[in-house]
Image (cartoon, rainbow, N blue to C red; front, side, top):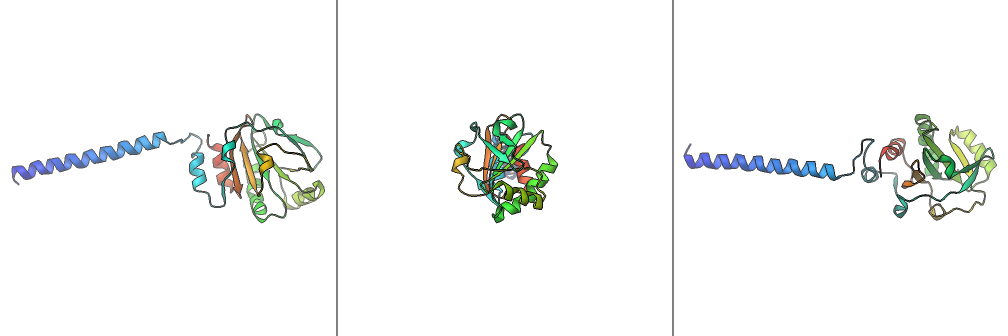
Length: 196
């Protein structure tokens, strides 16, 4: 091999190594800039992989939710502020809604997987309490089911126009994420684990 060919071979190897170094640096920098968190994937990544739901109310994410109260199927009053100190899902739904009915088993399994002192699940419908009570018993629902019963809601809850809509709220009562559509169990768990 001539000296010129050896020099070209050396420069080729140096070039390949330099390109590989740049690629590794760019990958590492990109990964460190992304909002990955110890608890799980970034909310943005979870939303991108969703097939049965989409993000909703993005301008409310990071804002404190205004308090309101509803009555559950036993007649007990539930205020959002009662759930401070634990995560909370506020699910707007109806018994006649097919996607809502598909979501029920996921919420039941979520309730079984995460203790009540860590996660509240408040499913709110505009249907009559007695109807909701019978439906919840028939379906084996193990989380809180409540009726609006004419209760006025503050924004953004008053702006819900499609169901199911789920508000994921953190322990301080801040809206962490909102989803329109049926959120499967594993994706709900990932949203709960993710940081804003």
